[in-house]
Image (cartoon, rainbow, N blue to C red; front, side, top):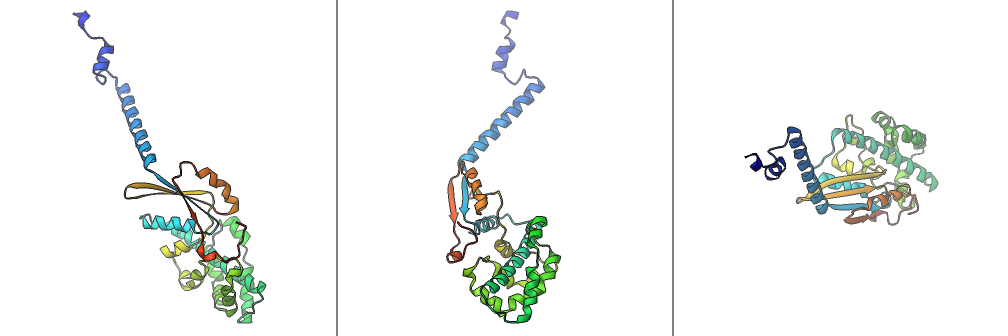
Length: 261
């Protein structure tokens, strides 16, 4: 009778799971799970639409990415909004400094000569220290200190005349929006709205990716810095790209460029 008993090797072929030890069964389960994950990832990669956003600095790449994030339901959390608040304060101070400097270089007289003192105050702001210690952002208490001077300067006819000639120098497109809303920005506990966040300007450093779905189709958008120092990173992002979206700021077609594109 022993000659007719099937060997372990035969049984393992006919009933593969019956003769496994608990350790072997666990290894097989993990192996199958890994295979499923690999197959699922392969399917995802095949369906993935990867879009690379390119364009010069301040062409709107990061703004477009923020719009896609808001449209597709991924709002910004409290920490992100607080970071954007500091960025907005920075945009305002940098913008008013640009206007004060432009007024002088364009030989535009002050509407009220006493505002020269306010101009000196904002021009004394240490931007290098801010960049070194605050990552290019301004804290609320610092903004509150400069707010009276900023308010007086923006109301001055001389700076308004300088703004009207903004095509002759480099000024952020959203500066006017924020300067027109100084009262809101100066409120205690101010939290940026979605519109504020969209218009906040912070140069992109490195590579940023955002994943979302449209009608069950996975999309990945890749944003890289547009400044000349960042463009060497563009080549790192071309792998498996489905499309390239090159953005241009149509509102800056006649504006003096800070850098050579």
